[in-house]
Image (cartoon, rainbow, N blue to C red; front, side, top):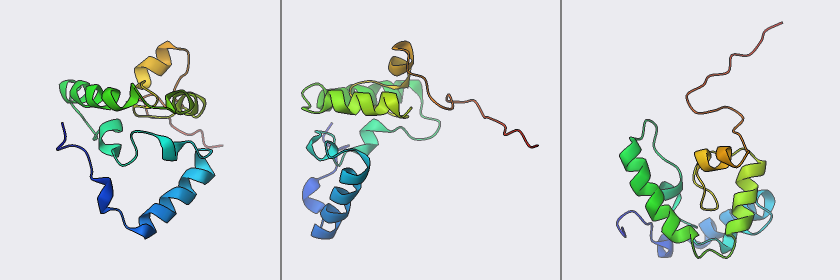
Amino acid sequence: MSDVYQDDDNFSAYDTESESSIVQGTLDGWAHLANCKGYAKLFFGKPAERPQARARREVKAHSLCISCAVKHNCRSFARNNHEYGFWGDENEESRHEAGFTLSSPIGVHITPIVV
């Protein structure tokens, strides 16, 4: 499992500063406390990801979410902003089952109406 994780020690001071400002501006300052910081590959699948690969990836993501201090903030953010990916120990299907839908469901293309 460790081969999937990024090493946080490889970030420069510049990266930390820019990440901090992004977090403060978009995620109300809670994201810098998240266990998943630096592990985006676990929380967002590749295009056309196979179901078995997704299940394995989400089990690894779950292992970080389970003890995260900001899990509830993360989950609320994803639900309220119709996010894709694994947020707050939930994937898109879990959020949908809880009554929170995506703006554009996976695999569905919305054709704009031209007037």
